Length: 161
Image (cartoon, rainbow, N blue to C red; front, side):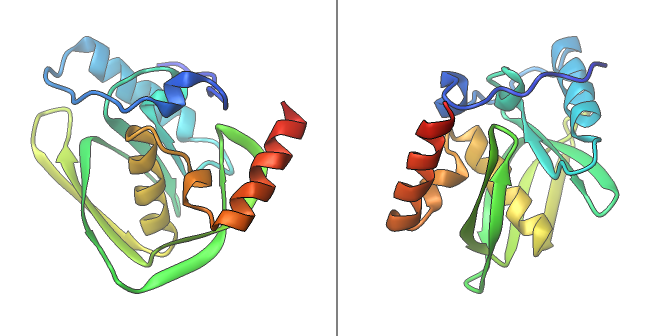
């Protein structure tokens, strides 16, 4: 297990869709251990594998003192009800922008034993599930911002780089 460095924009790994995990081996077990350890820090709600430079479909979460992980997650359900709120990202440090997400989300994936795992939640958990699944698809929360807000965010981002 190791606390891993977070990749930040414009690292191309953040814009690359991650590959399905087809074999659960020591590499994947190590990845999960690193994801869990790295997300276990105050202020961290979730962490996708590509944020630590690994192009595999896995993420961890740390919501309301519950830490977990899921492999090969697929978003299978989103509520029509939405939530608005500030959203940030470890890979886009220092920027927080209002982002609309579904109020409820459900992902289905597997655990390290290959058993099906269903993770769902409302509010912050739903936001986390959507945010981390986006990462695994090569998307950042900035991509979901309203056009005018995204323009402002990109300007601020360019000034920081």
